[in-house]
Length: 335
Image (cartoon, rainbow, N blue to C red; front, side, top):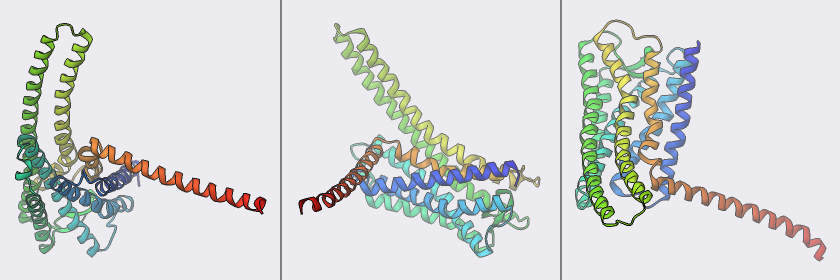
């Protein structure tokens, strides 16, 4: 194993560790806080988080073993199962992000009628669709023996052992109806959210400026702070939308483009690029908890409450142990 392989193995191992801890923390926060368990957002987040954990527990270790051993890391049956999961979980993750973007679009554009438009039944139907959509492609690939170990990616994933135009059409349709469809939904919904958010900011800015004009005796520093807060609010909305779409493209686009280029040419993929693009796709499982959950105020508050409760229990145990040892030491003296 050369230095490139060692670096890729280290990157993959680090991604596994961060993904496991961060997604487990999201689940703990959901279980701990009732405020986070709102039916629609919680269901979408739970679906995405469980898929990330399954990918971290099954697909990432097998890819890491493939990078280290430079060969198929498991038997054919296990590899086909892992390839089935890899295809299903990748599509399900993309569609789950699209579902989250639709939920946020409804919440921002229709805030007063959100509960009527995004009922628990509607959220369950959207999750059921993502599952059926994501299961259809690996089921067809399994029936046509298009699942197995693919050496350029050191992964058990979609592959055809011989040139087959049907596989090229199938693979192109899979990426178009997963990656491209999710990207179009993300861009359409989040750009609409950004437009509405900027309109709200403009209305707030007008009210703020009218108030500042009326308050003629206000100190200049206070007025400057108000204007600075307006600029920060606009920048914060733009930064969030850019993060949602940017992480999706950064993580998934290199792998999807590599698979499409692989279908359109007979030239082999550059050494180590296939594995690197696969690592980037896996890194989405590690970034999702921070992008969609852990950096939000409610999740941070839930983490603080969990830590406070843990430290409180430890303090009670230590004080109980100290009290028990003290009573044991004083009993003989009392006697």
